[in-house]
Image (cartoon, rainbow, N blue to C red; front, top):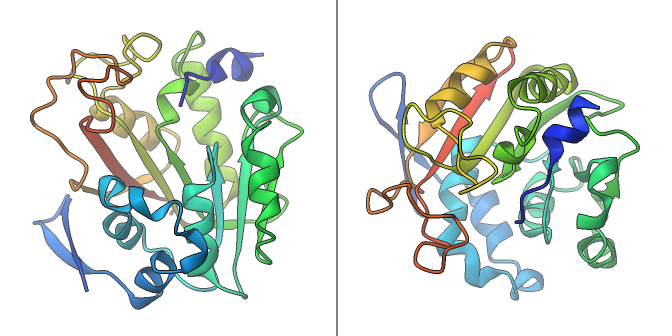
Length: 249
């Protein structure tokens, strides 16, 4: 996804290897996830499942039937469609774009709405910070967090994380997946190579009250030295990515 200058806006049977604060543990992939992934209706997107490690990261998130999920800046709706199948008729999925990101929804929004998923709502919100009229179970954003920092930096990230904290239920989950930068680089490359320092993200999200639950390393790639732009053909689709899970107390 192209960098979205959200910082400026905001200033105005598989197993999953999970590295946590505790020793590494294994989490089975629930049948609800494998069934949703196998849905023939999403056949045109299924070719991305292995590259995205879909089963693994979804199992790590803990998403389950009946959950209310926000898929923020959903791109072409890849995750939205899977979440719809997982949460089922008693759950709901909201695919949201911020008001100032409307142009990024122009092509995808009518496609997602055209799927007519009975338990999904896709729309451009009237505000630039994440918002919900009722508490949700899971807030999910993939390869977008670094964009929030563009131009406005840490204050924009703080405002974003505070908004996520506010809309989640007590015990709700916040999952951030993004392109990793070299440790110690902080926000230096969010608008150049489109990477962000994972340790910085961990500290930043925790600073507004979230608790760090753990990390799934299924998208880690030690062959990526973090020097290339994530859109460079030599590394695109194979970047070193972190998958962090946080919880609202």
